[in-house]
Length: 313
Ligand code: NAI
Image (cartoon, rainbow, N blue to C red; front, side, top):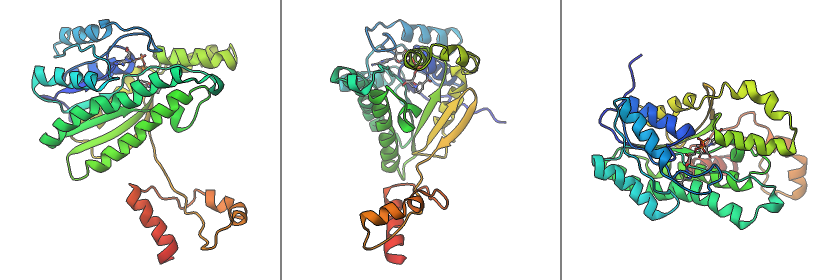
């Protein structure tokens, strides 16, 4: 197999000081690309401190790669601009953006007050907006860019106590798909990963779930967790960031070396021009039946499916 390389390209990886982001940055740097960002702070977002970004940048340079540490937060437009400017000022370009920075803060929905919601929307959803906008500008001008957003099965599929996190993360799917649509005709691809990896965040979430499920849960899960090396997520992120990546607007679930695609499907459904509540009740199985489902590539394609059903018959 030909080695897929990134020579001459500049990658910004947010939250690259630890966990998944660190592994993404190390792999991209090993293959010729550069830059890291990390605010620092705890898994729930308390505090800050530039050490993890500095450590990853040093690690890359010590292995012969190129990196600058950036310690801005992704949570403001100024922070997003500064992160992209760090790449532009050092190397004059940005080709790849991996929106990875994130925090958690689980709570039952009864306790999901504004102070638990806002920080997560800020870091995951607004953070991706704020870093992507200045990068997008550059990518459009050069007609090349690769953006990889980090979403989560917790939102796509649902997980208790994660309404703040799941909602913020799943907003990123909307961002991924809309940007992919806006980039049609340009060599800009925007995709998402839903990772599964043994990091401090996974430890926190397991601990939070164990409190309400069973205290033995973590013990039982340990052999599985041991297989979830974050480095095994990075090849998918790097492929989606590569010039040869042919797909856009897609979501890949990745963990422990296993890769699969999540897609948004639409059942064939049921049509009745005089649809009533009782019709919905009587035909629920047909409405839900996944046989013959389609996977519309965008909102226009789904409109065409509806047109087909009600006009063309
Ligand atoms: P982690 O806690 O090890 O790493 C996250 C990094 O983001 C930390 O180094 C942190 O300092 C940095 N960060 C936090 N807020 C920031 C901000 N405002 N600006 C810049 N950097 C900031 O967690 P992990 O597991 O590596 O998570 C990486 C991404 O993957 C996150 O977006 C997370 O939500 C997502 N994810 C992780 C899963 C897992 O199984 N570990 C599952 C699903 C999603």
